[in-house]
Length: 420
View 1 (spheres, helix red, strand yellow):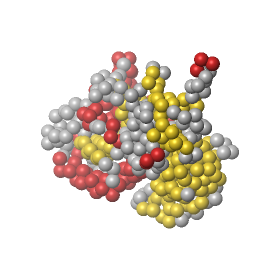
View 2 (cartoon, one colour):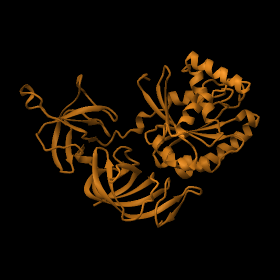
View 3 (tube, helix red, strand yellow):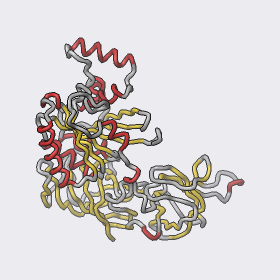
View 4 (cartoon, helix red, strand yellow):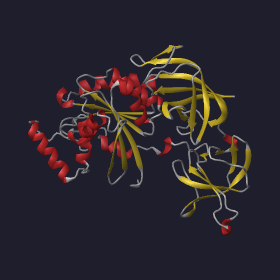
């Protein structure tokens, strides 16, 4: 596996589940901490009378800043092992920060959900699992932490594991790994430790270094939202026209048939290239310039796609949205919708249902949506968008809603179906 292979993580848990200690332990045991950082933590731990090196202090500084409004969203950390690069989004756990959890999880490949071994599966565990499921995170690690305070009991772990399986079956994530651990002692985080000889599964780091995510990308359906049109800058290159952007789906090669949406014009791909020259193939997540065989009218916001498996060109969407604004969303509200590189206007035709975040049941026909609520809505668009269901493509199936008066992002959405 190449070191360039990037895995995006999001961590979520309730207050006092030991999330800060877990992240600190991961960084400490993978030798990501500078000597002066470690000395500072040791001194602070001694001054506080902790009796041990309190690794939670590594990330608690970030969290304190965030709660004071210095970093208002999610704390991001990066670290590297010989096998992989990691970007970790540390999302706040409380229900009032649902929008922050959605923000942190929206690009994640893996969610790490913490459970206190003494308390087991609680409401917040189910809520975090639900958010991971609706955001299409295909790999979930449940870290059953503080096993040292539960006597390293295999019986207690199996009880929690069974509860988690029942929750997971209902939410249908593809891959759930449950790991017993003690972040304080370091058992099963990076090293195996002595406390739980009955556990023969991977440590957290072993799982994160080996989980296969390449297959999570949509390699079947070619999608390329046009971010920028590159026109000739000199007479020498007068016939050059390229379309720059990031591959959102499928494998792109010269010679591929292509349709330009929403216009429907068809041609073939003349070349796929980067600043370093032509590529034999480009995969999802790679930024490239696509050149076409014919001189068609293609603009920013258009989408290039496979004519044999094209996205829906739709003016009506049904979607799951997380409302992120203090001002409630009312039916008939007019907003802007931005999906990939295209922005059009939208009207909220109907609030179909809202999720009771405590029971995860749908409540039909809410009068309005309040901050942090997750709901199913129907939207009518002023112009068509080329879209896929979010379950098939997390890029072309996602959007944000924008208040045109303030330019604030007020919702994040995942497309369920499209028509018209």
